[in-house]
Length: 165
Image 1 (cartoon, rainbow, N blue to C red):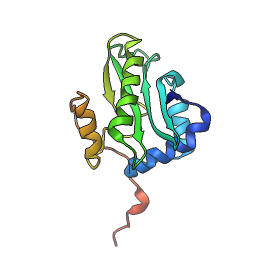
Image 2: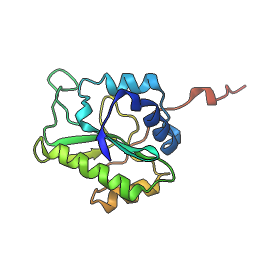
Image 3: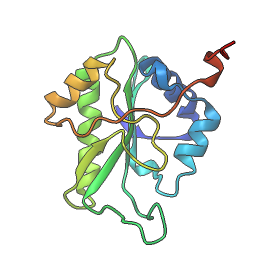
Image 4: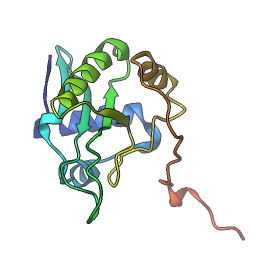
């Protein structure tokens, strides 16, 4: 069953996201600040797939209603899939397809729009589908998405570095 997001979903969503994107793990504070507090957030565009196992996937589609900067564009021809993940061990193709179909229906309600995957600024979570997740890349291609510009994440763990002598 697909339904809209509710606050009690946060823990499961973070767990699923962190399981899918190990190099872009998030916590509750990050999620609240960068997703829920985003001026363009709408629970109507946040879809949760739930079955007898609990929450097994989600997709959040952002329709920009407020420009990112003064005088900025609303990108009325675009919708942004900011977050999307399916629990490891679950059927990405089946669950993911249903979530993307629901997101596409939602976007059509605002007129025909191109859907941009994981590239919503200023509050992107990851800059594109990680090359390490070839299953996600193939999944999106199977649905007719095409690869755009390659982006590189600027997120880096500075604690992992050691000072040179």
